[in-house]
Length: 286
Ligand code: SAM
Image (spheres, rainbow, N blue to C red):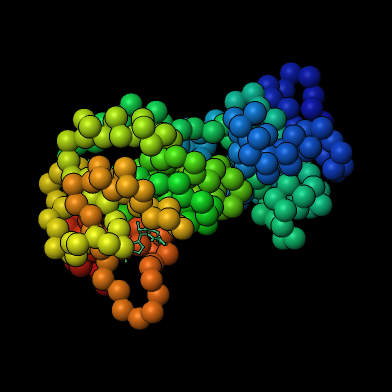
C-alpha cells in the first residue's frame, strides 16, 4: 500500500497535493520550459506504461505523480513503491493538478519526472551494420519524436543531433516518441564536433538531398555501419555537412510536393537501409 501519510521511517516520501501553488507542483510545471528542464536536468514522461518501461530500463526517476484514481491499481502502486525505494518522491494529486502538469484536459493517470540522459558523441563507436541517424538542426518536436520512434522500430542504433536542434526532452517530443525516448540513445554535437568525429567513422556516410544524384534504392547498405544524414526542415543539409557525405541520395517523387516531410523521409530511408535485417517470421504466422 502507498503510505500517503509521509510517516517517519519511510525511505522516500509520499505526499498528497491538491494545490497548484504547492512548490513541488510548481517545479514540475516549470519543466514545460526548456530553461527549467536544463536547470534541473529533468523532463516529464506521461503514462503508466512509459514510466514502468523507463524504470525497467534503468532511467532515474525523480518524482512519480499519480491521480487519486490510481490508488488501488497494483501497477501504479508498484511504480510508487519503486520510486519510494529509490528514495524519491511520490505525489498523489488531484485531476486538476495532473491536467496542469501535462497541459491536457484528459491527462494520463501517471506522470514521471526523470533525469535527462544523453550519450557523449565520443562514446559512439559504430561497428557491424549499425545505423545512426544524424539530424541537422531539426526544429519540429513532432518530427524529432517521430524519428526517435522510427529509429527504435527500424532497429537503428540512435540519433545524433547536430547544431541547434529542438529539445529531445520537451513534452511534445517525448509524447511523439511514444516511449522510444527511453530506448534510443541520443547524442548532441556542434557541426564542428560532428565533422571531427565523422573523420574516424569507418562506414558509409549517406546524406539525403533533394539534389542528390543517386536513387536511394540503388545503394548496397548492408555489412557496414551507416550514418544517415537528414537536413533541416526549411533549408536542407548545409554545404559543409553535404560535403562530408560519401553519397547524396534522393527519394524519387511524383506530384507537386517539392519534398517529403523530414520524419517521413527518414522512415523511408531507414526501412530501406534496414531492409535485409528486418524480416517477418512467416512460419510463426497462423
Ligand atoms: N526546402 C528544403 C530543401 O531544399 O532541402 C526541404 C527540406 S526537407 C522538408 C527535409 C529533409 O528531408 C531534407 O533535407 C532531406 O534530408 C529529406 N528529404 C525530404 N524529401 C527528400 C527526397 N525526396 N529525397 C531525399 N531527401 C529528402
